[in-house]
Length: 214
Image (cartoon, rainbow, N blue to C red; front, top):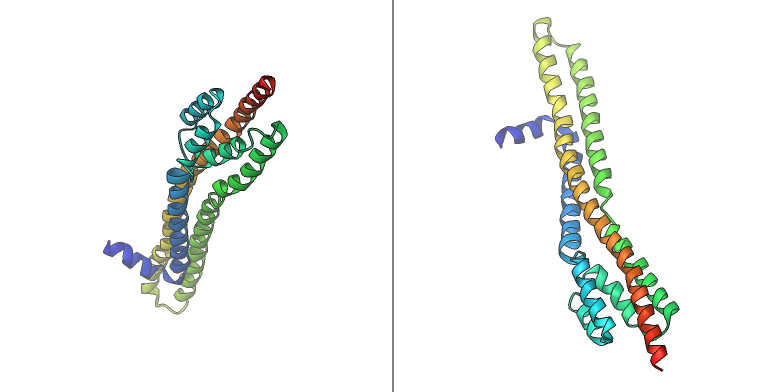
């Protein structure tokens, strides 16, 4: 741990922007993990099976209560929007589902891709710090005694490489986290697309059944 701190100090001023990138990436990661895994995500197949059974039995109010049991999850919010228009006709149902989808999908996808940008910036800052460090190391050799040049050059290069190393230390985890989060994001959005169509068809059958009874 002490060597890491010493390397950070030896890396110079460019270590601080890289540190800022790491803090921002960590904040985005924690925020996205909370919303994607603990709030928006759920077992969509099991949920829709319950909704389907209730709708086909004519218990729209109970289906809405089922949605209210998970108010933060993405899919129940969209399903509830359609269920509340169940007696308004297919066009109203479709419009309600589409409006709620347009509202929630941006909330699901936002900030996930920013992890890639942060990873790239951290890498570039590390490379820039290395280049600037090498320039300074070679410049310092002009005034050094011949017997000290090799030692100073080796030290200058090692210090310059610290920024690249720290940039990669930030970038690699950020890209790995982005890989997992983007997979979860896609899964939630795909479930919304799939079950929105299923809900429209289901409520269409329900509406036709109500009209035939009348």
